[in-house]
Length: 215
Ligand SMILES: Cc1cc2nc3c(=O)[nH]c(=O)nc-3n(C[C@H](O)[C@H](O)[C@H](O)COP(=O)(O)O)c2cc1C
Image: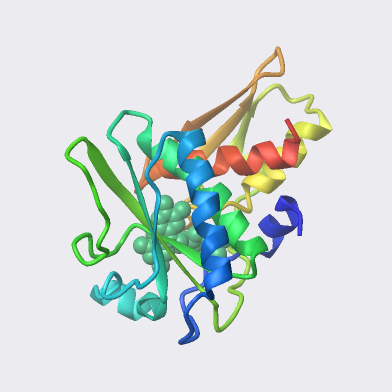
């Protein structure tokens, strides 16, 4: 499965089978996380037993409490930490999809119960639930390309392909509050129009765009 195929297949899943992730797959996950942590200067952590990470009322209502494992997204605190977590975390989400697992980014979770190690100069940004889904989720309602783009109107195919993949990105409460601008010199800018976890969203959207645009 290519990353593009993983983008097409991925939907948030909130209902999981009562089954642990097998050892071999866990090793692959840990190896990938180690690569991403080096590349993104992060401290993403695979926590095999999600325990009571999703014991909040809202999580229970959404079904997330059934997730067997979780990724704690941690990194040294800095202005761009949230965006880097989005970018490298989504790389991980697509890899997990390629491994046949299901995921759900979750900003609502129990920060104590997750059991992450967070040093004094670090911050726990968000969680990603992971496991074998009872279902594969479903496509989200999406804005149109027109609603999320700006700039030059004569648009090359690579730009349109990038936007198409960006519109398939998960965003907090499916807000899709981002604008992708094509400048006269064909450079691209990403901006957030605010909202819950919007910097994480931007990182995720950037990675999807790159895959679509192949640049
Ligand atoms: C930064 C971020 C935070 C999210 N937080 C939650 C959450 O707390 N609970 C939840 O059930 N889903 C959460 N989601 C999942 C979104 O609701 C979901 O991505 C969106 O509705 C689009 O659906 P899709 O992922 O199936 O394409 C979050 C997603 C992102 C990107």
